[in-house]
Amino acid sequence: MKAPWVSSYGDLPFNLTYSDKTISEAVLETAAREGGFPALSFMGKSISYSSLAANIETTAKSFHALGIRPGDRVMICLPNVPQAVYCLYALNRIGASACMVHPLSAVGEIIYYLDEGGCDCVVTLDQFYGKFLEVKKQRPIGKLIVTRVSDELPAIKALAFRLMTERKYPKVQSGADTLTWREFLAAGECYDKEYVAEKDYKGEAVVLFSGGTTGVTKGIRLSDFNFNALALQTAVMSHEDVRHLKMLAAMPVFHGFGLGVCIHTMIYSGGTAILVPRFNVKSYAKLIKDNRPNFIAGVPTLFEGITGNKYLDGVDLSCLKGVFSGGDSLTIELKKKFDKFLADHNAGIRVREGYGTTECVTACCLTPYDKEKEGSIGIPYPDTYFKICQVGDTVEVPYGTEGEICVCGPSVMLGYINHEEENAQTLRRHEDGEVWLHTGDLGMMDEEGFVYFRQRIKRMIITSGYNVYPSQIENTLEQHPAVRRSCVIGVPDPYKMQKVKAFVVLADGYQDSPELREDILAHCRRHIAKYALPYTIEVKDSLPTTLVGKVAYTKLQ
Image (cartoon, rainbow, N blue to C red; front, side, top):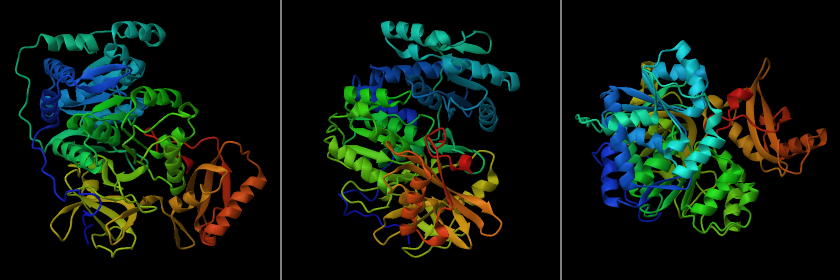
């Protein structure tokens, strides 16, 4: 049974009409319409749609002058700075693809991404120049383009930033294979050859790399159609006219959530993306105070940080029209805590939990604006279907039964790079003739079409023949007043196969002691079946996270 479209929640349409433009064509079309309205905001600088369009065209010419051609892939290894946005659409303009990579990746990881994507050209920040010198010792890079934050700041602020921050970084040595951003742009400013490519909007536009929390990190090929469909769907699901509204883009540009929702959806729709290159609680609070954004999107760890942000004490958040959580499981307790935070700060909304995977860019399911169910991740996007299948099979299970979440819709990826066996396992044609994405996630669906995420299938713990779901135990742990954050893993055991271990971060005001741990275990005994009880609780100052802020349970294992 495909999930029904729940049209009673608002007047959301069942079907949408999607663009046949490329992502760059769609954005330039919006820019022509919006003109002087701000497309981007960056460290106090406003970048209009007209300026965005001009920068995209110059950057496109520069890449073409450098020899980048249709079908090539270029690594964009940048935080949330305007240059990352220019490069994304500029490469698309000339028929090439942007491979988006986390700039904090280790040298070995960057080499892997270069090889996986077949990239011979890289754009990065001066802060990471030294790391790329190390990369080049092990793997040749045809062209390395190094930009600076100050390249996109007004003159006085740029000078101050160079003196206070950028002077600490190694000086860029220009040469045959290395260019500064200004040298790179200079080539485009005087370029007079044809550079715009005829491009299939259903072909590859962007490569994003899976988070790597399970298995091998893979390059995910996503099309213009995928991104434009996502933008239209997300704008409709927000239940707001996104045009001329502002989104605080704190999620990174190299992540589907950050790129697809926080940046592309906003620019596609005529809104403003407020770029946040680096997150800390003080600067984040200042951005909210100064910019009064209408939308905030993030992973649960971001919302956990916000609730304890003393710099937001007393701040009026009535400007917010939507707060969206995704990328990781939002526990019931954290949702309650953040909803209270919003209410206490005069926001007339509650956090809306969504679900998605990089294999469908990002979100494909969202809690409706006017109805929520405890523990649910919401209903599917328009034209997106969910069904729950037996794990490892295409056989659908009844409503209320757990199985693997499968998704079919316009944002589903083209496939992985160089992983044909996994493509065959992940993109499977079902008996209905449609290709379905097998997410590897465990969940269920109720008769109204609300979807419930349990966890990654590979994360399930089997102890004494019983299935134990870490997310359920984590939710119970976080109901205890002393527990701020938790993570549960399976530890090999010769008798039980696996036994359950819990890691917790204590809330402010609590000190670790044998008595406190026993009290937490006693709380678990009241709410958790005996076979699923943690055999021990380990208290930590913090939990490790992946580069995009998810709890990295594999590191704890």
